Length: 140
Length: 140
Length: 140
Length: 140
Image (cartoon, chains in turn blue, cyan, yellow, purple):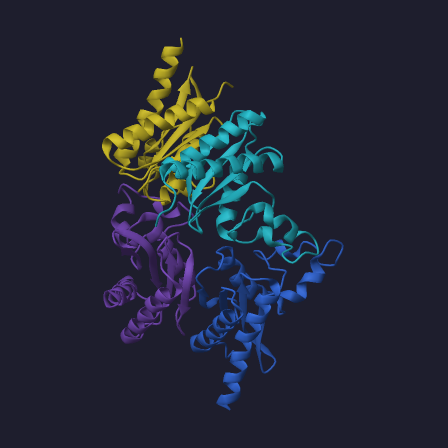
């Protein structure tokens, strides 16, 4: 498994923090490896502290579910198939902001972002993930 | 760090307990510092003991979310943006009774009250927070 | 069971805090009821925050073991009979500073003190417990 | 509250990682604020993952105990005064590698390092803390 390196995680982190600055919303950004273990994290000045846990758990959820956290939201509502999922596996996050990083069809890590609206969190997480793709494109 | 002192926390606590006496509802009242660490606590005779944890967790939630706990209620309902939030970050309280204490635009602590109705809890928490503001007004 | 009232717990707390001031060591002081549930707590300015948990857990340990926490120390050393006790029952404290409050041969509550040396913690806890005895002597 | 900023935390982190590179031991480095809440983290390629938790917990322990974690080691041995301390307050680390960051006599944050020997962890943590002091010296 050629998982993310710290250098890659820091590149993703920096891209996420830059996007957070652009949209003017201080964020917590976490990057985990293919096993869901933390590689890099930053909390910007003014970002809420509940999101220290939430951002990391979004990244871990993306690994454990092999999906973006936003894809879970509809599935866990009352009456839906996975109602109650969120309290399993140590606590999963069921709203957007966690996105797996794929490479050659394999998940090699994930990004989790929290402190803004779900839309803002998602935009920042996408920027973090995109930075890894650009970086690899250049490397080829 | 100009966080709350014990003297201030005890003043807030006393004001909360007095208000609880006035409305005839025994309460648990907790005061935490800017980092969410407990400074002062009291449980009145007859107040339910589940609220020992709930009152403290309301205060901590106010610190971690930088908001009154009552502001979370609408956001975490089924179908709403933060549905599932309550089981994150060690367990957050998503109904009213936790209020941050602000000073010069910064959160320096929080009060959490529990054992009555949410409306009663909120009234008592507001009385506790207000006592700190009066105290500072006099000091100037 | 005629357990401690909040008024009694606050009297014990005040006596503990006064003693802490006298010996010049900021303390965390907790008072619990006969069931081990928190009644009153205060953390003095400058007292370490690890002791928020430790003081409360000392009081709870006194209730669960029906003994002062200092009585456990010898029993839990390597090779001694209760080696490993401290990680049971949710986490027990095995050094001094927790003392049960007895009344008519029954344990009606407990005091836990933490942040100084074990000797200092014990002195402050004893002062807190003694205040309850004086108070009852006067009441008769 | 003049706690650490993210910029300061990242400076400390970078200095710690640089020192880890110099001594050839991949490390986990964590920086927390005055309340013990995570600000910045990095795990170097090859560093063990148990230390994700240990490094963060070392930093938190430094905050909760207001002391370097290495100062606890002698106090918690069998027969010593605080034997059993490590399983209290959510789990404290009782060997070196966590160091508080002081400013004007007040603790404003802490660094925790883990993955090498305790001596290596301590050297890296000291380098991280020293970077903050140099930075402030220049700023004056």
